[in-house]
Every structure is written in structure tokens, then in C-alpha cells.
Length: 276
Image (cartoon, rainbow, N blue to C red; front, side, top):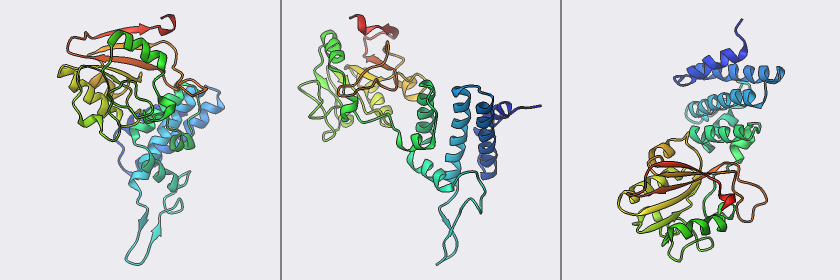
């Protein structure tokens, strides 16, 4: 007899090609059953979260496909769970589609799973760990910048604000470092949202034009922006997790320092900065 988790494996493969509401509804139901199975058999948070991730991806896609309103002129018929039966309200599915991309949803699920934290709808909607570098929660720890500055002697902070810039010369939101030319040796702590791909792409281009770019980023080798822009440089995986200035808790993700430049050789370093 095929149990719920075996069905989930097949549903996950099916999800890559599913396009119709009926397909997505079936995948959602299989994931829901697998979640209940994992919980009932005490298989652990990872098994439960695996099912939840597939459930929410299917839910988000349903939210993309189902329109908010249908009907003729002067008439508005709201599609509800009565007209398209699903275990949760369609408004929640639509909100998932509006608030997060599928990539962001999967990244949030991945981070919660790494921390053995239950994946929930509210956390996917409200919880967003990737903040702008202008937020004090994600400001570069001064001790880390000082350590790197002693080694590289930075001349430009390419992504900063008036309050948190680390170099005398810096680009802020107003003059947009993405549109400027980067020269000499640059420090970059980019926004940690969907913009990070743009900033890492810019760093790669400027490093090929002669600049040296030192970047503090989440250690996310499972993402496309990482593989496209980081692996040709020196990668220093930082032991443990950073604590941001003004925060009482550790970062919810591991960090890495990426060093890009024409003369920088591609290599990986496990960096124990606590001993420096």
C-alpha cells in the first residue's frame, strides 16, 4: 500500500508540470494528507515541513490561476470555496500569490526548515527575513567590517544610507549604486530581498571591469543568484551566525563574504572569525 509520503514524492514531481486547477487541487490535497501523516506518525518537523512547502506552493499557484471576480456587466460573482472546493479560503491563496513570488516562498520555507521551525501561512505572508540594507536590523557588524577593511582598505560603500555607511564615499538609495560606476575596492552589504540578484549581478560586472568587490550576503548556494555571481570569486563561509547591531538575536541564516575581482582566484574558505 502506498502511504501518504510516497504519494507526496509523486505529487512533488507532478508539481513541476501542473498547470490546471484540478491538478493543483489534487497536489494540495496530497500534501495536506502527507502533513497529517507525518504529524500522526511523529516523523519530525522536516517531514512535516516538506509537505507544508508543497501544500503552500500549490496553494499559491491556485491563487494565481483563480481570478478574484467573474461575471457579466454589472454582476460580480466572487469565486469561493463553495464554487471551487478547497480546504482553505481562496482569499488566502490569492494573498500568497500577491505577497510572495514562488522563489521567495521556497526560500522562506527553506530557512524555516533549517531552523526546524514550523512553516505556517502567517509566517510566509508576514515574516520576511530579507530586509533592506538600510534597515538597522541588517547593518554590517562594525567588528566584521573593521576586520575586512584592515585587509582590503575600502574606498567605496556601494549600497548604504546616511546612517549606516561604512566608507566616507558611499552610494545611497537616492543616487542608486546600481546605476553608478564602481571603482577601486568596494564594500557591499546589499538589500536581502529580491533585489539581491541585481546587486550581485552588478558586483560581478564591475569586478570584471577592474574593481574589487567584497560582499556580505546570506550563504545561499542553493539559489540562482549565488551560482551566477559568486562561485568564480573567493567565498568565505562564516562560522556560526552573525548578530546584527542593535539586535538581541542571531541572524536567521548563515552568512558568507564573497570577494570578486579579476585577480581574485576562485576558492572556498571556512572562516572562523571568532578566532581572529
